[in-house]
Amino acid sequence: MKYILLDLQAKDEGIAIIKINRPEVLNALNIETMSELSTAIDIVNADNNIKVVIITGTGQKSFCAGADIRYVVNIDPIEAEKYATFIHGLLNKIENLEKPVIAAVNGYALGGGCELALACDIRIASSNAKIGQTEVTVGIPPGWGGTQRLLRIVGPSKTKELIYTGKMITAEEAERIGFVNRVVRLSAEEYGRLLGEQTSINTVTTTRPPSTGSQEEQQQQDEKQRANQLAKILNKKLINECISMAKEIAKNSFTAVKTSKMLINRGMDVDINTGLQLEVYGWALCFAHEDRQKMMSSFLNKAKEK
Image 1 (cartoon, rainbow, N blue to C red):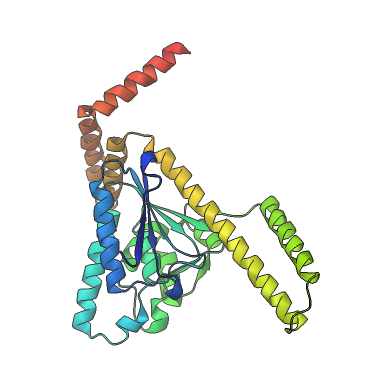
Image 2: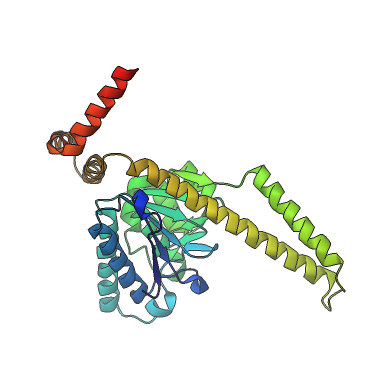
C-alpha cells in the first residue's frame, strides 16, 4: 500500500499498528488513502492473532488533518454525497470492528481526522495534539460522523460549541471534556535529558568555524532541532503508552472484550431496559466459550494457592 503502513511487529502480542503515511500533507485523507485504510482494517479483522488495533499518523506533526481539500474543493453535491457515504462505511467498519481500536493522536486531528479518532474505541493523545471539528471554517458542517459521535462522547452543549466555532482545542482540554482518555506528556527528567544533549551539541558547534548565517538564524535552527527532537521522543512515548494499553486488553478474554464492545456500542442507541436485556444475552452467551471456563478455573486455582 502507498499511503497506509501496516506494522505487525507486535503481532505476537496480539497488536497491529496502522499508520496513515502522508506526512507531507499532515496525513490528510484522499480517496486512495481511505481505500487503503479500509483494506488494512479488513486484513487485521481477518487475522485471529490480532486482538487490538492502534491507528496513528506518521511523522510528529499530525494524526490526520482531515479530508484533502484539493479534492473536495471542486466536487458537486451528488459527488459529495457519494464521498461521504463511502467514508461513513469505512468509519462504521472501524467502530464496529470486533477488535478494540486505539487512536494514538500525535499532533493535529482536525475535521475528518477528528472524526476518524471518534470512530475508535479509545483515544490517547500526545501533549502537543490539537483537536477540532473545523469544517465550518471552510464552508461545510462535519460530514463524517462528527455531529453524531462527538455528541455521544462529550454531550450536546460542548459538541455545539466545538462545531459552531470550528476552534482547535489542546490535548489537556480534550482530556478534561472526555474526548481523549489520557494525555501523554514528557517528564521534567526527559526534558532535562534532551536539553543536556542539545547543550552538548551546541558546545561542539561553537568550536567549528562560524557559518555565514547570523547568530539569530543559528538560534532559530537550534530551536527547531530541539522541537523536532522533543516531538520524536513524545511520539515514541505515545506509541509505547498505546501498546501498553493494548497489551493490557489483549491478555484478557477476546470473546469477553468483543462482546463488551458490542454491548456498549448498541447500548448507546437503545433505552436502558433494552440495553440491560442485551447485556444479559451477551453475558450468557460467553458461557458457551472455552476460554471462559479455563480463565475461571485458573482464577480459582490461584485463589486456593493463596
